[in-house]
Length: 503
Image (cartoon, rainbow, N blue to C red):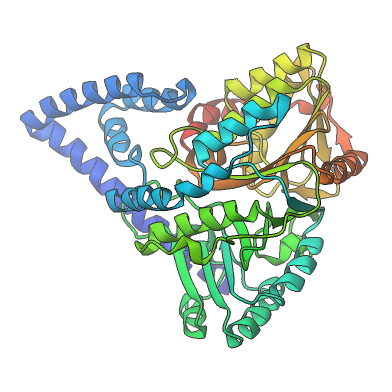
C-alpha cells in the first residue's frame, strides 16, 4: 500500500496530472465556446487554416509535419489548440537573447578551428559552422568502455581540482555513485574550488529528495535546475538538457552516455548488465566543453560570465595524433540545424568499408534509414547494436519495428544479450567516430540539448573498435524470423510511429 501511495503522490505524477488537467480545461473550453458562441467557431476556422498553412510551409523535415497535419485534420478543434500550445519551443525571448550574448562573447574561440583534415574536412567544417565549436589537435583522448572505468577516472581527477569543477547532467540520482562524487566535491569546496552543477529538472524528478537542491546550495555549490518545470501547459518532455559533461580546471573534460546513477556503474542491475561508455579529454579541445557549459549555464542564470576566467589562455600541446572536435546540438531556434543528425548523415555518406552503431533506441526518419540503405548498396558493412533487455518497453517495440526494414536493406542488427546497452557511438571505416549523448531518436536529434565528440585519426579509435568487437561477440544477430511481433503490437507501433517525431 505504501508503494502505491508513493507512486500516486510523487512529484512527477502530480505535476503531470496538473498539466493534463489544465490541458483538458483549455481544449474543452475552446470546444465548448466553438459550439455555443458563433463567432468563436468562425475564428477557429480561420486559425485552423492559418495553422495548416504554417505546418505545410514550415522549414522542417517533412516527417515532423505529418503528425500535426493528421491531428489538425482529424480533430480540428483539439488538434489546432494542441498545435498552438505545444508547437512553440520552450525558449523565452530572454533566454534566446542570452544565447546570442554568450555566443558573441565566445565567438573568438571558434576561430581556432583547424581546417587541414584532408578527406574529412567537410564534416569538421560543417560541425564548426553550425555549432560554433572548432576542431583541435594537441588533445589526448582516453576511451572508457564501462561506467566503472568512468567513475574511477573521474574521482581521481576531481581530487586534483584546484580552480573549478563544472558538472552538467540530464539526471543525478542519489545513491552510492553520487555520494562518492559528493564526498570529493565537499573536500574541494573546503579548499576554495568553485563548483557549479546543472541538472535537468524533469530528468532528475523523483531521483533525489525534495530538499536536494537546497542542501547542495547550502554547501556552497552554485547549482541550477535546467528548464525548471512549472505546472503549466508546455511540451514538458521536450527541450530538455540531455548532456553529460564534467570539466575540471578547464584542463580535463568527460562526456558520454553516463549519468550520475548507480545503474550506470553496475551497482544495481535493473536491466541486466548496463553497458555504457565515455571519453576523458585532456588538452585544447576541453575549451569547447567549457564554452558550451557556460553558454547553457548563463542561459538560466541570465548573467554572462567572463569566459577568459575559465578558458585556459595557453597550454602545452599534448603529444597525440588525430583531431578532436567536441560539439553541441539543440532545438530550434537556438540551433539553426539538426547538427547531430546531419553529422551522422555526413559520416554515413562518407563510409566506404564499415559502419558500427551502438544505441539504446533507434527511431529515426527516412533520411537516416535511406542513408544506411545506400551505404549497404555501396558495399559498406553496416552493423547496428541495440539492447537485449529494454528499459522502456514501448520505445523498444518501436525500435524493433524497424528491424525488418533494416534487415531487408542488408543492415546487420545485433541484440546485446547481457542486458541494456546505453552507449551512443558510431564508428566509420575505423578512421572516425562519435561518442556522445545523442540517441538515434527524435527526442535527441530534434528536441533536446545534446553533446558529442567527433574523432578523426585518433589512437583511441582502435580502443573503440576493439570494444565494439567485444560487444558483438556477446550479442545475438537478428534474423527476419526473430523480428516477428504480435499483429496488435505491430499495428500499435505503426500508429505510434506517425506521432513519434513529436516526442
